[in-house]
Amino acid sequence: MNDTGSATPPPGLATPFRVDRLVDRFGRVHTDLRVSVTDRCTLRCTYCMPLDAAFKPRGELLTFDEFVRVVAVAAGLGIRSVRVTGGEPLLRPGLPELIARLVALPGIGEVALTTNGLLLESQAAGLRAAGLHRLNVSLDALDDETFRRIARADGLDRVLAGLGAAREAGFTGIRVNAVSIRGITEAQAVPLARFCSREGFHLRFIEFMPLDAESAWSGAQVLTGQEVRRILEADLGPLEPAPSADPGQPAVDWRFADGSLVGFIDPVSHPFCDRCDRLRLTADGQLRNCLFSTSEWDARALLRAGGENLDDRLSRLLLDCTAAKHAAHGIGAPGFERPARAMYQIGG
Image 1 (cartoon, rainbow, N blue to C red):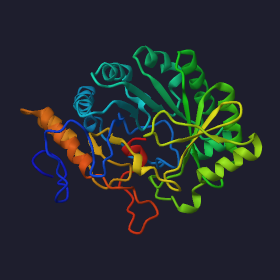
Image 2 (cartoon, rainbow, N blue to C red):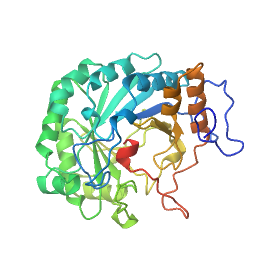
Image 3 (cartoon, rainbow, N blue to C red):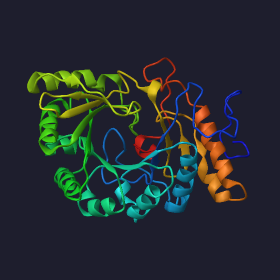
Image 4 (cartoon, rainbow, N blue to C red):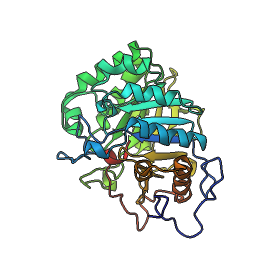
């Protein structure tokens, strides 16, 4: 670490301080910040958490004031959208207060949230009242047995109830995220597509990534987006490419003849690193420039040390983190190194 609290970047990567945008050395402009508010969760999904997950002491997690301070500084450097994640973010007490404060920050145009949906039925109205713009709900299966096999817990009925409550609360454009795992989820693709088309949700299939805490991932388990698309077309008819309003989004959208959309997020078979515009802030205050980064930049240390020019030092930390970003995550490439942290510890 250097005296700003940041990891010392390789020679030539330090960024001049007085800049107003988060641009890496490959020209990618970063406008999206993923903010994890907890590492705790109500499920133990095989692709994310071990059964015996160890969580950070609550005192090591950022406070709401600290989250808002970092996001405000990031907004001054061009961050325009914030996604609140976990773990399961709805486990964080008082979350609507944080949502409202993030929505009110100058420069922030969208605040979204990713949840597993188990606690959504009771919280959807409060989140909507706080100004939350958009919801992503994880739902990998529509039958109890497969849901339980993946999540290692019950709760499908609660997720479905949460989706219904979110729609009743006034949320539109709700996205449903489904992780695809070979040998487990093939039979779920068509039912999920039919369900989301009927209910008006935007379904997105996500390839299984090497971020499981038990290090059980292998390339043989990756059910690719192209394979899922073939499953859908064989039963539901042809899909046509659909234009995206956001070139930085990870999903590539396709459209059925009835107009319903389905997206494919294919980080393993078709990486989208060339258009990545995201940075991440973990629940314990570490900045990361990639899900698969093996380095972190310690915002919590700066925040808790205090002192003069704190915002300037946080700005430099964000700039250093961005400058050190690699061209690609490198999954499947020689020398690829899994990050030490699993998905629940980083933020989905």
